Length: 251
Length: 251
DNA sequence: ATAACCAGCCTGTCTATACAATTAAATCCG
DNA sequence: CGGATTTAATTGTATAGACAGGCTGGTTAT
Image (cartoon, rainbow over all chains, first blue to last red; front, side, top):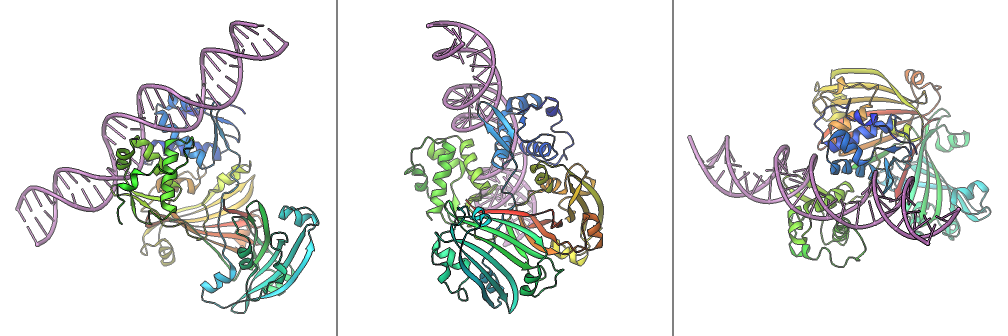
């Protein structure tokens, strides 16, 4: 882990908009800029509190607050006795939550229905096993459900399910309840991850969603945990012309 | 907003495992327990720093740290001159976290640079005024910035800014700092909303992003509040082949 | 040579004090 | 009565000082 020369300290406050910000905030801003500009690389050591105090003539508690908050925000990592370092990439940055499609449609006051296209019991391929965190040939279920909003296709839901954690998945009536609703009832989903992309649909997907080949679609890949186990992984495909993801943060 | 009796203070430290925790951490734990148990209701006023100091005999800075961190974590809301209150429940509202494209690129260990394409002062059209929640002809700034990751276009950032809230927006050097970084420094962004869609780029956008006309793009529309005012609205366009949104929920 | 020790650096926490900024209520005054 | 002003309460920030605890590297003792 390389060091940071003192020269980097001298201009920490340079070129900052002289907005009426508290000192600790200016310091935070100056440091995040050093990081995002690439001047301070991952795992590189950043100046110690004492060094900043000496260079900038501010109180150690002020420096401490800036570094502590940046650590809480994931920019820095601190080790007692060693120093402060630029953290590894912020993995979980943009976070959002997606609702159950049936709920969403209902919330808009529209009619929801769904068609079950595939429901089978199978053994996990290597790729599926990787996705679910199980061994190859572990028992899984595969399902494909097509969701409609006011009789227009709104989502293709491709899903694989860990059979150990939801053994009765293939006995459900998915015309009545969505797979999501059933899985929520059998396994308390405590954690999840999403991957959102814009993609072009293939021919089968075009037909199912009733869109042109050239129409961009919003694809959401989602994995859901119950405790340490992955319950299910889904790929949700929405026609771009009829679907938006809405999110809200703060208060 | 009702009050909290002093009796609630006396036993703040009771029933806590006497784990070797710092005082501020015990205080945080005691307060979150009061909230999650329902003893302290939403919008209810919680003891002031001075009251806790008097009741528990700890330093005000220690109490301040506990309350400040709980505020950052969304448990409390503080108003200078008024007091500290239990925050609204963090509902199942889909939440995103804002971040900065420059940071993201840097986090991946890649080089970020940006080109300022447009920066102008103007009067809000009716549509822009609606978006920003101001009157037509209210002063705004418009900017278009093209962001690169390792010299490949990764984002077109179209933005309008409320000139009243960020009067020096047009005097910034957006080759050095992103608009996001400047706006964060002048206005504490407390709230925001996102709209994510899959769209096809028009000809100008294709050229700027160096993609084919048929390539789907991920479009994020974002509005950001500081208190009750909308500071800025942005439209972010990413090439679908080079960009994914990643999210994580739960714990 | 090896082990034990220690000095120095660094972060983590706590305290006491001071002043600024904001808000609501109380007070004053015409 | 009503408007302007003052006051008290509360949070926000900054500072100086103190001590604890972890880590590293050099020194000393065996």
